Length: 217
Image 1 (tube, rainbow, N blue to C red):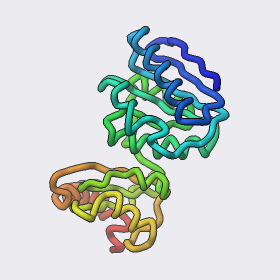
Image 2 (image 1 turned 120 degrees about the horizontal axis):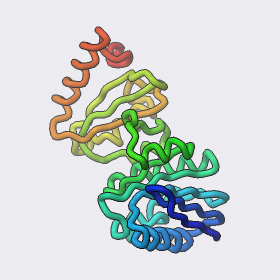
Image 3 (image 1 turned 90 degrees about the vertical axis):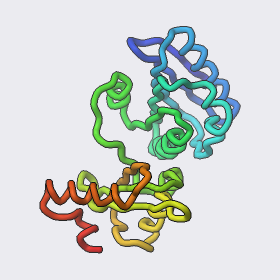
Image 4 (image 1 turned 135 degrees about the vertical axis):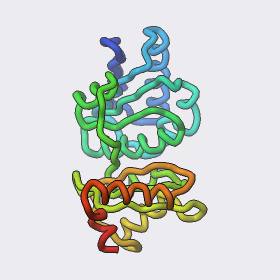
């Protein structure tokens, strides 16, 4: 494993190649943390190249040491040099958010830097694929399904056995309508039915109709 950590204007540029094990990741992230303290910089561009694809959150330390390494001001932009690494990073991002780690997966460096530099961004959406859905919250709330740039469905999860994650998986596996989607987004809330009604009313006010798959259901 080889890694490089350099201070840039407002962020740390951190890259690693040949990272194959959880121990490699631990060594690298501890070095990143030391650099953050040295430079007083909580914004991190994390580029992983030529490395084994890891889908286990524990191999990123999310269930053990990472929550102790980061502060609320930390931002971590995840970049990979392959589609497989990006898919893994999307899943890790979802799990990281549940551990209160402010991490985001990106496909290109320019978008990652815009986020680190505080530029406005659109509502966060996640790829509608099983490996990413498995990291969705097991909580009550509302969710939206997207077909590229079109919002096509609003739904709710009341809690208990019916969670945002379980409802999204029901859509994916055809147990609920609106199975055609490219991305999803979600919001935790105390009263999912009321929040879903608010979102549907706002959509109708703007477009004069409900979302496509809400109208069909």
